[in-house]
Length: 130
Image (cartoon, helix red, strand yellow):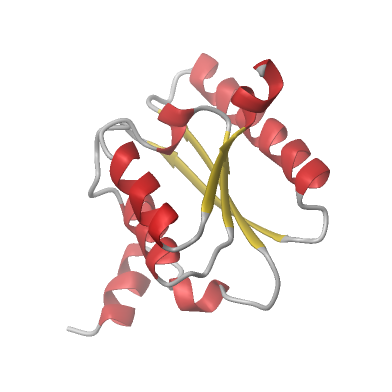
């Protein structure tokens, strides 16, 4: 089985397709459920990330990871895509509103991987409240 077939079947864009010269920022937004309050949170997270990128990375390419899933699931296709983007060094920065939006159970792992590859992880709300 070829990797590109699996990615296509899952509807995941290959991380190598997202590389370019210059900085690339991955914005991560996540909610746990499909209820109305959670969906409005998703919209708000996206707006905060967009503004943060405009303020801090105006010339960077911005790509998105959006999911509706528990933060403890590490086998979700979007979590696996984030790992691919990190290990392939396809991104320069990861931006999300709160630490638990990236992941609950795997946050330490993703942070360590990102640090090892020279990728920064920035949390919008830490900047606002600091």
